[in-house]
Image (cartoon, rainbow, N blue to C red; front, top):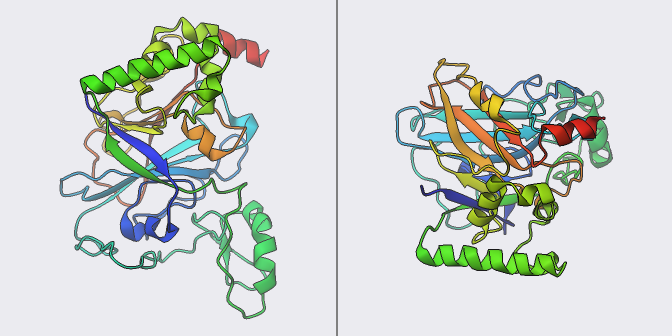
Length: 352
């Protein structure tokens, strides 16, 4: 079964990743599709620590029907260390938004990529200067800039202070690393399943195993995903057939950060029975139409290296969406299952 693979590329000009051009991207601020009915503060607030969740990534995943001419899936997460739990995804939020071809925000003509990029399509709602999400709180002094929360206002104050209440136009904000992840474009390519690709996989695995035996895994050609190293060195993982299958499947394209296949099956990194079997058995139906959800894409652990946040860790993030992608207004929540390499017994030891 052919998957589309996503790879991270640093943008030459970040302006091409605005909502006008329907991007797939990692980090930065969200490029909102529907511009009137925005996700609420409550939707993007961590239920455990009540902090605002950070924008992780979005995938533009349209398909040909009346309701899904434009369609984007967004992923947010809480970055606080105490909210990261093994094989649990309560600190994540997944949102779906979609529009027909004829809509009030975007032209029916495909956006031109000639010349210089045009400005984003503006929302009628106030957005947070620090994170780009819905912002009901205005600066109490100048009333000219908005925030989603007092914590984001405090974090952004150093940048806003020089222009606050001066009548001067504020300079464009510099991304705050504690709020925004580094920005990358996600470029999609079809996964090769040719005989040569299989041989490449085998060669990469042989190279890894040889270097691992010599304690030189950091020299593996073309492998930047250091997050996998701790898994490769795990005795439990080496005995896990699912992990061996995971390694073999990604060996030819080790820098993939997304695997996309609507109606496909996730590439799990560990034994399902020992990790997330009950979650798969209890997969909730769509909150809008009541219909079943199905797998659409997964985020890979290779992504962690790009985020530069030591609090975060995962094996696989599998996103499940409404099978019919039913008609909606604004943004609706979909479902995410987080699988880690650590099984229940090891997780219990961590808690103890």
